Length: 70
Image 1 (cartoon, rainbow, N blue to C red):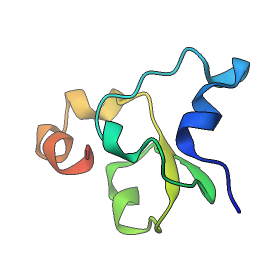
Image 2: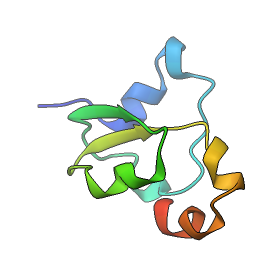
Image 3: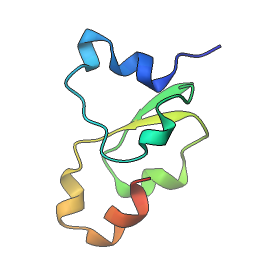
């Protein structure tokens, strides 16, 4: 059994993180974590994977911003 996203976000280390979209997924289990530094990573992700990003590249690549946030 894996921790639920809501549980992970309650940890002190992650307490300043903000969920921008997909609030209905807060009860999903998280099996792994990926750091996003390139928009093409979405093609390599797996189910129950937590994606962390600062979203820096979204400013320049608007075509990804709507497709990447669920």
